[in-house]
Length: 321
Image 1 (cartoon, rainbow, N blue to C red):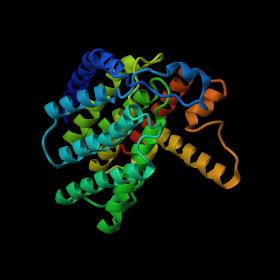
Image 2: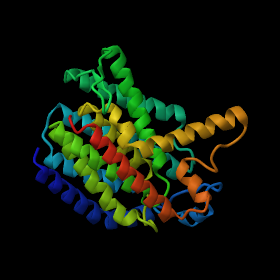
Image 3: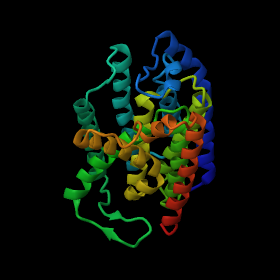
Image 4: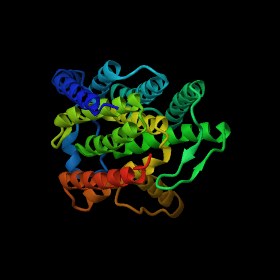
């Protein structure tokens, strides 16, 4: 795969996001699409109330235009596009209900689950029609197992639910998700190059450019938040890239920060419901550090650094791909 194509895609997507943001942010402000802040969260976040959200439209527009322009059109292309836009749509509906109807929880858990299930089923249909390989490899080992379609496709549906929710949980501090996702996507772009999947490589590059362009306006102090529209779309892209490059389990390593964020929520809820006690000051875990006295910038830089290390470990594990 020509790495120059990926660099060009990143550049174009970045420029599109940087151009779109100054046009979209004032529109979001005029529509009063402002962020609602939790009262029980870090007190420093209270001043963010009213900051325009649903900025994920910036990311998704820049991504979609770049991906359509530079990607080849094949079965991988459709899987990647449907995953990114499909899960992004769930996030958009969640944001829309939260803000327009003033319902703080947005979609109910059941509605989100149903939406994710439907998109996952559509993805599985696309994979089946393309004759997708149902084997799964364990990164860093020669272990490869294939338990057939009866196991693989339910696994894919559950995997995509986990990935999109894990990425969504990571959003909550200015610039955190933008930076962590750009690092993870860069690692998966290298994976795609080694797996010779042009569509996956271009998908990763288009999303890298989009989130970096968004980061210009999302870095502390943020002028706009991406909302669930952006985070679910990013999660859909990352999960789909792992699927088409046959590195499904590699997300656990490269996306280790996302995994820890999700586990912190699961542990917190399980502990409180069973013991009546909290393990963390607040979950997801980035808020635990904030309530412990860390500044937003320290949290963001630390999580970015961990992401870089995990991305390097992930690439080392698949060096022989």
